[in-house]
Length: 289
Image (cartoon, rainbow, N blue to C red):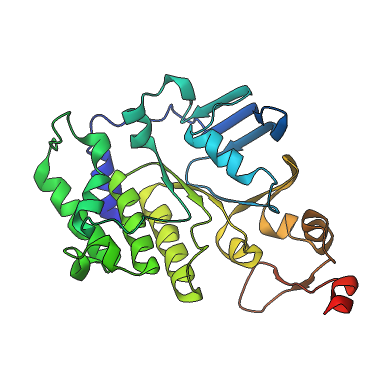
């Protein structure tokens, strides 16, 4: 997908990162909903082209963290910087040229075509009348995205005629058309079978490698996270439990404490360079069955 990187560089209006600046930096950033502290003050730095996965049990603050980064929720304290600039210095259109979000539900089954859905990803670059500055280049870009994600034969189909896995591919194509430098994934594999889970993660990994993309994903699958992430951020109760490489943080004791379960069995497979884990029910749970 070298073409994706080249096309992004041709966009004159896209904000450029400050030289040597992190892709993302949180400085004592927190999130509070009335009396509920969803995320305690967090210092976290993500460098360009890194692949981070955020892990933790339900209610640990994972979604609140993504909401802070995407701007869905304002920080209760601290600050957030995107590509070296304070978040509040970005306008909506300019932010969309730097950051895109792939939600866990993908795209809803609407009565629009796949082609229309892909074109919607181009909104940050279009003028108020919906016109592209370079229509020919945009059409080439969309055609190549459709080909890469095996969507070419579906372009005239409506979203409400597609399966959930197909709609998730369209959602990924839409954010690819947006050409961001930072991609946020909110449990993107939640409704996919194993085949499509691996496909989606492989597509994101290739895009990251070839398109100068920084990826931050929330996942529930610890083993999938270990296979694709360079770094992991572990949250529990809105606080950081650990952060580092999969080899550093995916130990039996850390993961057991993170999810309040028996320490899992750590498997070191000869063809996989990262730890994989075998989970089991606690003795109390076994006795209930």
